[in-house]
Length: 396
Image (cartoon, rainbow, N blue to C red):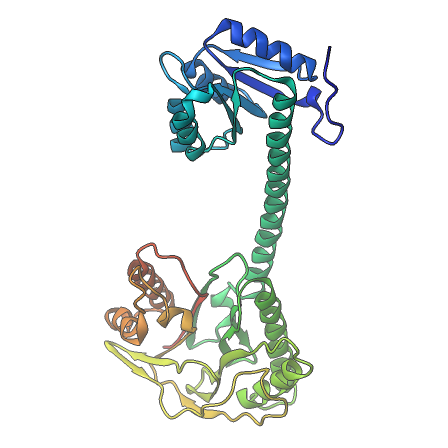
């Protein structure tokens, strides 16, 4: 008499089962029991080697695996599946109750459950139903994760499209620049920007949004838009836009109704390529570096001010900046200096200066690449904890 399947479980007729069992009698009994429960898509293997070959060649929803078999037993099969770390189907071990030590070892190797060789129909139905339901939920989670990762990858591409890449087309005559941004996740909170504001004017900035992931990425995009629109608006007034005015207007917008308490550290410089003069403003950000030949020094004496988004109405100030012929300005986020190795040591300012000294007279692209390579070598494979952003401008 057939046992009716539980209507709340996966449709048995759609389930593909692999039975790995050396006893022809047990295979016959198990196939009969499965048929009574509505499981008709059954493939058989007579030992572990055949079972592994079947798993590699086909797609199964579940494997019923005998513990004791010639050539390769159930433990051996699970050890190989475990070592391969592939997407193996869930496994229920077939065993006698006297083989409990082996059952425990199989569970440690990833088996979902075990089934006594009596093949009791209600118990068989319950074990299969429970394992298949877990598989269904895992598959659903994997599908949603894949969809989320695809969306995040799309967001990453969109975010990288926001920052400029045509550096030669942006830099006015007399200046050269290069920049790079490496998010710690698919979507990061760092940003860099470079804008030609006139025949000889260049705006360059690097910023770091508090937090990580999509919320920081959205604030990054908003900040980029505010800086660009404010700089363009001020440029229309005739004079070179003051970084202080840019930060003040952007801050007021970001600080207004800032319930999430998100803030942005930023450095903005506006340079005139004709004579190398300009102005620079910091808002809670790392001080930039000045490079010339083998010399690397911190740009000192800059006004220290709060990050954007923390205090509406704050009157930001800027400081004079002079970039002599042959000098380079190097902007960076704290993801560079706070990069960690496996021992949780920081790359630090000394590490940054050490990476830049040998190439201090090089073109901006070489400066950027030298720092990124040094940070990667220092980390030695340790997970990247923060976004890494660098920008270099050199006056010829």
